[in-house]
Length: 76
Image (cartoon, rainbow, N blue to C red; front, side, top):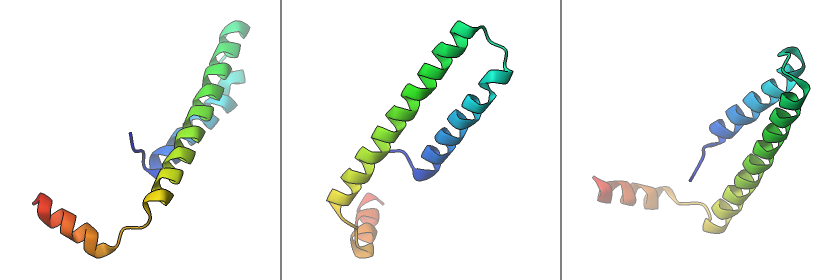
């Protein structure tokens, strides 16, 4: 699965907003703890996938525009 940088920014923003709003949502203490653990695990997962994606992209190297144009012409 390949996420765009904008989707990572959006995901981290939503998780940060949820974390900031948790005290004001008046969930029971046990639910609050569970939600914060889930949010933390999601942040870890997103960080890991972002790092793995960047490492994968750096191993592939930059694509030259001519290669991109040729692959687009073949798909047409």
